[in-house]
Image (cartoon, rainbow, N blue to C red; front, side, top):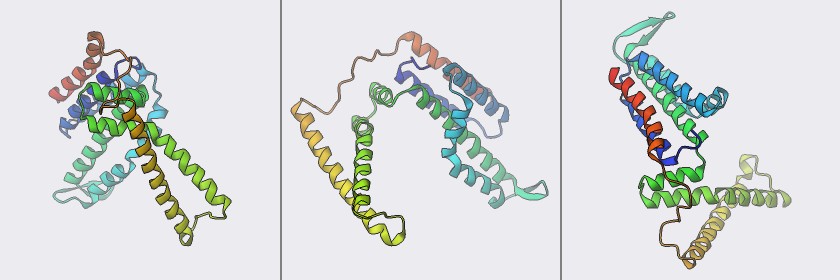
Amino acid sequence: MHRLAPEVKITAAVLCTVAVVLTPREAFGAFAAYLVLIGAVAGLARVGPGWLIRRSAIELPFVLFAVVLPFTGHGPRTQVLGVALSVEGLYAGWNILVKGTLGVLVSLLLAATTTPRELIVGLDRLRCPQILVQIATFMLRYLQVLVDEARRMRVARLARGYDPRFLWQVRAFAAGIGALFLRAFERGERVYLAMLSRGYTGRLPEGRAPKASKTQWTAGLSVVAATAVIAVVS
């Protein structure tokens, strides 16, 4: 899993997610099969369930929305533990919850087995729009630089007696955000001019990472084939 070419893993993740989304919400067995398949892939990649569960908390807002739907939905109602819930709301909440969770797990597996640089290389090989690829590349490359810059500015504020923890101290924080934006803009201009002087033509060099072989495509698409079979049978 970790040695597969990034374009293979990206393609497999997108196609598997599409298959999950196209599955009817009443096909409960199909979603259980998807979960088993994801568990098998996670075991093959040696990604622990605890790691996946902790990072799945990112979908918590959607879970809360799904929980509300049975109470606010219209149409026929059914009794669940003495509470009247909308049947359509139950189906809608289940649909959001199960498909969102499976999609998040697939994305987490992709992130766990692929470095950010490999993701950029994979998107470039899949012929994604170059402007998006370049923006993502620069974001990943200079995000840590901006974080370090913000940390130094915070230390400078503290050294001058500013500690904006309360509402009436927000002026210092707002000024720091503005100064950070100006510094980031100026740094970006200098970096861009330096790139032009070194022959930049709108596309970064790909590097020496090997492209996907037929064996890797077969291995990656086998998971897609299993997912497609489950979706068709459901």
